[in-house]
Image (tube, rainbow over all chains, first blue to last red; front, side, top):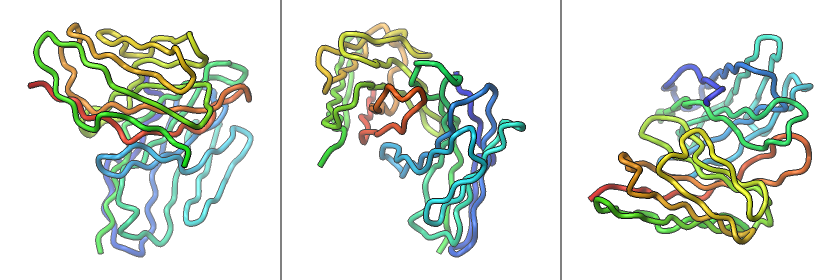
Length: 114
Length: 115
């Protein structure tokens, strides 16, 4: 079952602008992860935010998590052409579970125009 | 370099044929996963294994089979019972044992088409 759902489905921005995408999920989580997928390639892990964290940064990426609303956002600042990709959020089992599988949303396709 | 290797990159299946997709990792990860991705969609879990000689069905296991005889290897067989096998197949691996979901490392996929 796919727990995470990204919004919007697609996003087109000018180079240098910021891109924001959101993820909503349904049940309690251990952590939430964001991945990037370039066309025809595998996914690359970007950032993991734990359920007791509210914000996390990695380079030009900023992720927020609101467990009361069961939602997360990924912000890419000062976008570059190389950021053109699909971005997926992924959630796992409930806290305390020994199940390590993830559920992925359908993704947000980001196009950065030069 | 540590990583996950999937082969072949492209595969064609004839009617009634079983085909096997290879996935090998040298990351010393206990858990391995197989996903199917259809155009413009997210990943759906086919099978996963959290330890050698053990595996569980994911959300769409029908028409697929796996084995996990070695830690490094998790081959996926697409059987003739899978009537719509055309898709992009991704293999991933992760560590386990820390009580929460760990980042998954992905291969570069196998694109399977029907002849």
